[in-house]
Image 1 (cartoon, helix red, strand yellow):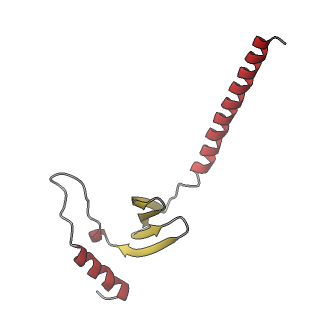
Image 2 (image 1 turned 60 degrees about the horizontal axis):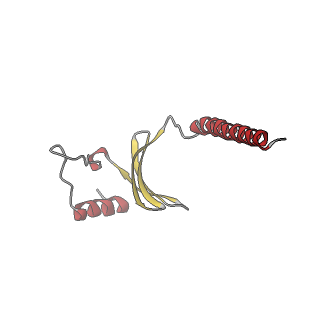
Image 3 (image 1 turned 120 degrees about the vertical axis):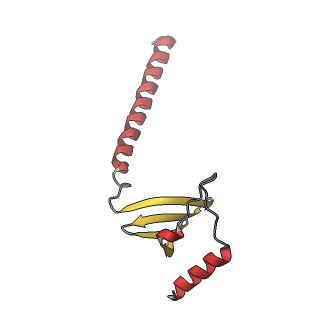
Length: 115
């Protein structure tokens, strides 16, 4: 075969492989999308602390859970009340944050079972 015909065949084969990879990726994405949806759980917020560590607020039914997620584990830190969640939006409507001491004392009491 002449060189130009070989080149055209190689380009055609490359295009077919590229299209097949694209189609396969779209197909796999449609299958995995069903696994990440849930009727009863929702990730309300996520704060990335480092490359493999993050804090996540998960809504599970009527409860809000604060979870610590690493590459090897998931730990429940505490359950949150609606009053614990403060909108940290920017601008005039932003609420002032409670002090760290106040929050730490509240979490310690909750951990001990006190009110």
